Image 1 (cartoon, one colour):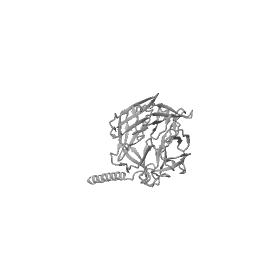
Image 2 (image 1 turned 180 degrees about the vertical axis):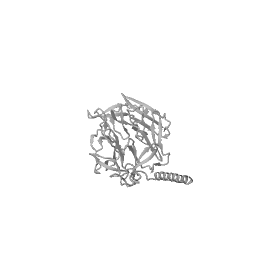
Image 3 (image 1 turned 90 degrees about the horizontal axis):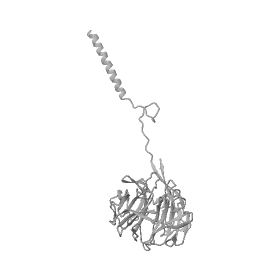
Image 4 (image 1 turned 45 degrees about the vertical axis):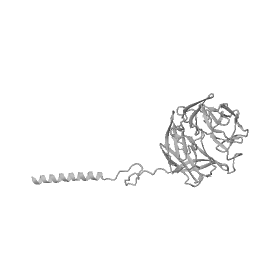
Amino acid sequence: MKNIIQVIKNRFTFIILLALTFISCENNKLPTEVAGSSSSGLNKEYVPPPPPVVTYQWLSEWYNNGNGTIEGWRIRLNDRFIPGFYYFGSGSTASDEPLIMVINPAGTYGVFDRFGHFSDYHDYGTIGGWNIQSSDKYCSLTGSSNNSPYLFAANPSSHFAMLLRYDNYYSLWTTHWSNSGNGSFGGWNIGSQDIYVSGKFNPADPNNQQILATNYSSHWGALLTYQGVNTWVSPWSNAGNGNLSGWNIQSGDRYYASDFDGDGFDELFCVRANWAAILKYNGSGWTWLWSNSGNGKIGGWILNGSDKFDAGDLDNSTAKSELLVTNSSTGHAAIFALNFSVIVSVWGNGGNGYIGQHQLSSFDTHLIIRGLAIQYSNLLTINWINVRTQKLVQNLT
């Protein structure tokens, strides 16, 4: 009897050991194949492919062959270039190409497109009812529910300010509004240290652009909106306290308006000496989206007084605008973008002295232009010899 019981115990123990061995083998099997792995019969762990590498390439769309002209316009160092739309009469600006107005204090002006073709050119000494002078201040402006593109002009000596509009139907410039020489508009007193920059800053007024006016001598700053029917309003003013919510208005300030955060409204890039910041108008005041805290840098770029800037949606990959910085002395050019509250590098030329096929020059004027009906921006670079239009193309490899 004892022998029988012992045999049963041995068999039971064998069965338990066999079961444990089976479980152990199951737990130590190679992982089964997943979708996309090899079907050669051996099980392999799936390894995802590396992310695509983003590279950029500049493509030239138009060049004046270095002849010092733009379709007959002899380029001069005191030419003023103001990008905008300007043409009115087709019913909407939605199909307009970006246009560039060039004005020379000698009394000539013209309007040309990104391919260097002039559609208006005169040496009258006037634009509509505006007498061209060397002390003029200009900016483009879209107002009255986005259907009216204007050239805004002001002169501290004559005390005049006007909104000028080119009417396609009649093929002439007209004075849409004038202050009749009273020295102000919308409560702003015109001064010789005024800086005007236009943009769609106000989220409470999405159909109009505004003019941000600053004056370092009077310490004033204000937003001004043309609402049509000879009416200007000022949704914001600093009451002469000398700052834009912490940015001190001083001599040497440079301002550039563009949509750096991609929300459909423009922000203000401010730069002076070692300081740089991006400010946003929230409907009642200015807030800071980014600042370098006076460290003298934008990302890895060391600020220099001879730097040149412009802003716009250069990489054409998002709704956000980028910041272009160049310096012909160092040969460097770079593009930066705002990523939440951090400035990130998008593109750089490594200091080779070029943007695409354009060799950097101390005489360069960079204009980032984009029409409302085309799907990409252009960089138009002008100096007294070379004029070239390029676009930045993103490649994924």
